Amino acid sequence: MPRLLHPALPLLLGATLTFRALRRTLCRLPLPVHVRADPLRTWRWHNLLVSFAHSIVSGIWALLCVWQTPDMLVEIETAWSLSGYLLVCFSAGYFIHDTVDIVASGQTRASWEYLVHHIMAMGAFFSGIFWSSFVGGGVLTLLVEVSNIFLTIRMMMKISNAHDHLLYRVNKYVNLVMYFLFRLAPQAYLTHFFLRYVNQRTLGTFLLGILLMLDVMIIIYFSRLLRSDFCPERVPKKQHKDKFLTE
Image (cartoon, rainbow, N blue to C red; front, side, top):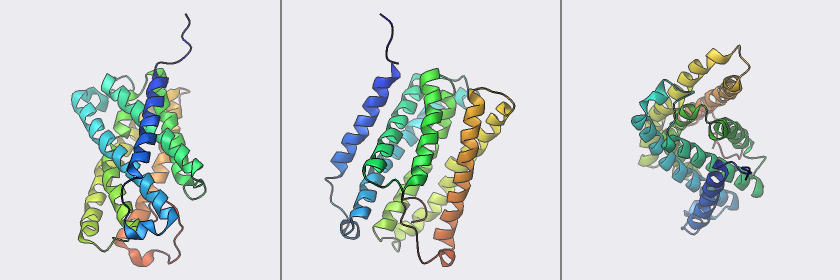
């Protein structure tokens, strides 16, 4: 019989439904008082809890993949492992879930930056999932989730009005270091690698375009992060009520 479905589709569906079930479970946890009083903050809190869980699992998983298959650091296009492939499927499922959650919750306008990021990330991951190319690149990209652990802690403390706590002050420095090590450095390394495809018309060229757009977004987010945590006097009094680093 002809193959009607790609074998990765059940993996993507399973991962998406897993994050959906996780969200429903996390919604039963008690909320901080400052969060409970605002429906928008309540939604953000639940959304960030799922993001936090994804970051912990995928960040550690990505480190293990690189440790088990160090060729991924060099052979970004051809290096492959079952663990790395499953990780890319797992994270793609998270991005599908979060995209649906944002749209279904009516937060499209407030979180449009997330949606743009998710669409680009899914486009890149699908190349590894359906064409079995650049799985190593997908794993290296997911090293950013180590940084996201501390970034999510920061955002959760901000929306719960705990930004004056000692933990927040310690985390902002740890977050800055992790941002350099696991977001800026891997992104710069990957961009340098993919520049070899600049004059070609291949999948690598498509991924280079995505990387360059992500580079711009990362630089903008980094400037916001520095301004908010280290130069607060430069932050406008009227903040946009979005879910990203401006909060």
